[in-house]
Length: 191
Ligand code: G4P
Image 1 (cartoon, rainbow, N blue to C red):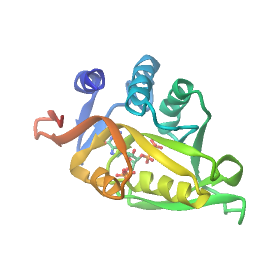
Image 2 (cartoon, protein in one colour):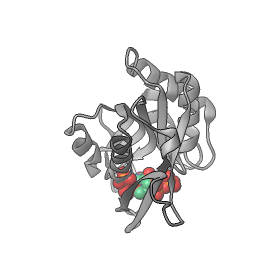
Image 3 (cartoon, rainbow, N blue to C red):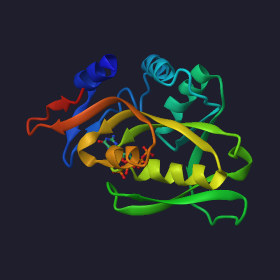
Image 4 (tube, rainbow, N blue to C red):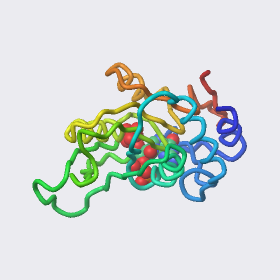
């Protein structure tokens, strides 16, 4: 999606450790007009596919997922990063290992809000190593929900999470795919 690439080039900055800072428009301050265009692009890409729920993970996925939910005319559910003990039986739960932060945490979704009738579009801001997306796929599987696909804003292709998840047969549509960061902070996109 050219507009997202343009925004990344204009307002994104590359930090040490191959981290792209996009907090002026994507994951802190939010350009909701851009989100609206992203949602329309996912709607175009997934036209003809059945989707009755958006699933995302807190925190940065939520804003994008809400606008996508408006576009698809369905609810959005976000997986919570659990800070308290699970109440057995009431939630689906998966472990997510963050390679960036070197931590593992649980994500949970209430059994009330996901089930076998759901056809999910999973939305997130970044796909890097893929741990967050794998956690959401695990939760969808526990619920018996069908995953129609995943809509990602920015995929860091060189971290290979996308390859692994596509090889499981999941359709992943990333709107901007980054092949590499240059030593001078330049950004190389893959088309
Ligand atoms: P993964 O989920 O794809 O495996 O990625 P990883 O463990 O490497 O990433 C951990 C967190 O860092 C995730 O957010 C992910 O979205 C984010 N992230 C990964 N690469 C980048 C990047 O280049 N730039 C930015 N800004 N974020 C990146 P999180 O910890 O779940 O945070 P949040 O959603 O609560 O903000």
